[in-house]
Length: 88
Image (cartoon, rainbow, N blue to C red):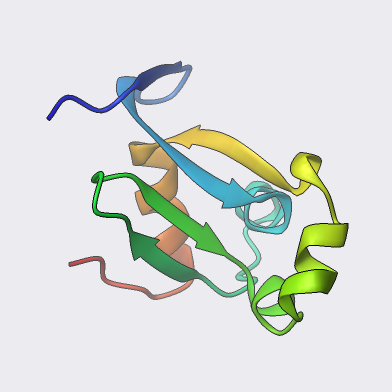
């Protein structure tokens, strides 16, 4: 199965992943925010930070669609490494 891709200024053309904006902000600042990750049956990776993980589903949903952004798999792996997470 071919995953949708994005073109990243750092990593080039890569599969797309989804993360909360706090992970992106943390990665830009070099600050680990937590990295609760999963990989769906469709092969798509996603992750949320500690703060988002501690919210109820209703509270998380209330943050709205702008809380989740697309990043490339390379940036996703970099954010995981910043949070000392080894992906399977």
